[in-house]
Image (cartoon, rainbow, N blue to C red; front, side, top):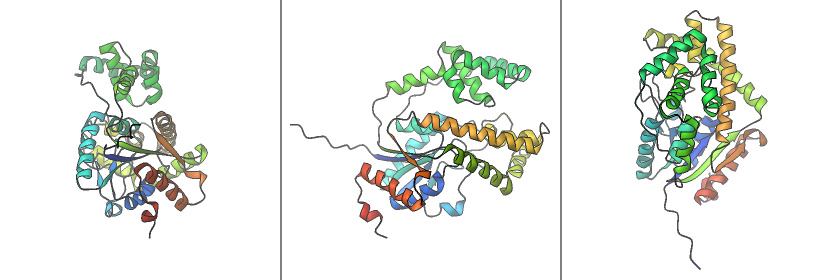
Length: 330
């Protein structure tokens, strides 16, 4: 009888979940318990000067645990998933080389999954003529009409993209125009072509009651406004960051920019932001439910945070064969 072969792949810890579910605070506890360095798996936290709207952890709170891929590019830069994959993979190697456990924490499903399973991205040149035509169509007919175009040829991608995310909607249409295949089909083929993960993964997803999550989202938006979100967006606009930039399509930025440019009043902008964020959280959960190997932890199923922390530590210890008594010896 053959003995099972040891799994020599490097370990990688991942914590995902919808916005406002409580990933950040929990990740610090976990990182300290397992000697981790955290890699942000958020597509917006890469941008400098965009702190409040992206819910970045303040610098003082990062002192005890190193954080990576935060504040690495200017708001004008069109940061992409392939760029994230490359930088994150490099960071994982670096963290391992120092005897630490790399720990991806974030809510951008495609970014995180691209690293976990080594997606291959086909580089395509931009068709500026087509993009300009689609942008003009959106200006004349509205974002919903452009989104409807995508829904006709690629309903799967359309279901994952908000109509206001014009850049990604146009990109998905561009891929179909170039290849005759929906972007979602190409992405699925990429997933299907991959072998097992290059890492020994421990994937944990946080969830909670939908009504409670939406309540927390509304409270977070109110706190962001109190912390100065309007001024943050005003500063970006004064620095001539284009409203069409990838960074300015992020939640909080496009809604407040519309208010500052006189296109709506503040009350409507805030209401739209809360609604858009709730819809985004729903899309995040839908994405994560399709991730292979994800173990869920219901934040509302345990009465105390300490019990949730212990439950998640048990999952990690079981996956990586750690000694729980050592972790909780303090």
